[in-house]
Image (spheres, rainbow, N blue to C red):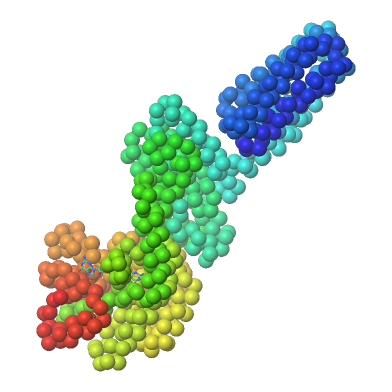
Length: 597
Ligand code: C2E
Ligand code: MG
Ligand code: MG
């Protein structure tokens, strides 16, 4: 129901007092007609007040109270029908047609047929009051006319209702209907003291599928996702598509937060399973934001806004997870904006620096490569961790110029070192998911290699599992071109994302870097040891090299050596250092091999 239709319903009612006022002069029973006209005018004005001033008539017309409205209308009509000595030539049934138009066109079939049924009683009363035959051709024609109106207009109303309340692509209810349902649930929740949860779910890589595989694949993906979600949610849940790749779920009558978590977790897991679209396996993930009535808001708008912001928070937390809404301190949003403009300035002024962390051959402990890691020493705020500003840069798109800057600086630095006679090391540079998706990525890399004249085999790109998995077929293509260029590619933080060893086989990559969370306990924790050993063994079978990240102790190194790990990187050898320190470090190391910084 639209606010506009409710307005029409109210305004349409004014036709009854208007007709009565017009008939007033020619009526044989003027005082009664005037009295009915006044009652009906008061009723119409009440409806208008609800529609235009209180703006809740549309909500009322969706609720059972609409039946009460119908009976009020019928009572007013029956007063007209039974007016003694109704001398008009006009049959009062014609007056009821005005209301029937409104019922059929706005409220649909069902209530309109009940209205017709009740109108029969009025016709009967009329025949009694006026002493005319009930079963006349007039009655028959009237009835047929009413049925035709309802059939024609009712169909139109139902179609309009479908279009305005359902999403044509997935067949799910749309935002409008979700809002209506939520507002009903809030009302019930208030009366019964029950909680309602609102879950906003957004597909993390949908835009990518749409952009690369076309809109028809995107549409199929949305339909498949809608089906998958519908299949696993509880029967009391209400699912809707909010538009684009966003879905909303309402869970009414919640008693335990765990129940919401179970549903959210189930959704995340269900969507992680590959989806087959146009014969291809597509891997997508989802981010879910949750708000709760009454804690996080007492109106539909506030609850939906808060679920939405919790969803963005989930995305910031690395996607593929759910987050409950937490009211932000006012400072948080401001802090983010400040940070964004600070980062923009830092990029313009080239305030960002690139540090280098050694990567060492596990067998003989010779330095074989360095990882370029960006550093931001803000003139006033001091050191700001990349863990803080990289996700922000990724969200805002600043990662593209930032990443290019790091890539150019790292390649040019490595070329300088080569020219200066330092060992011919490789430099590895992190590529964020957004960078990896840039259409001109290969071109930019080629350009930087040409500009800096660094040999491609001395450049390694570190991409995350998530970035590689967003569109495997496209990833394979990009990686193959990079391989043809002679650049090496490794999967960074392996074990924290999809961790599917089977896809490693599909991707033309050179190495994996085991995430430091598994290396931490590799010499003491049986699980970490088993994971590291399995990754190393399987990677070797697939012909991939393995680097262990975050090696901090000799015991960890010994264990990794026993597993035949290829390279190690971590504080055991050194943290990321500015270029000048790195040169001193590597020169000292050639004279003092066990040097640890
Ligand atoms: P990453 O690519 O996995 O980088 C390794 C991180 O582990 C670095 O943190 C490094 O300082 C830290 N690390 C290395 N060895 C050890 C160790 O032994 N123990 C511990 N506890 N930590 C160790 P950092 O520099 O804070 O970077 C964090 C993340 O930020 C990086 O993770 C990478 O994902 C991102 N990042 C850093 N620089 C860039 C960049 O230039 N571009 C992009 N796209 N991302 C970057
Ligand atoms: Mg890395
Ligand atoms: Mg890493």
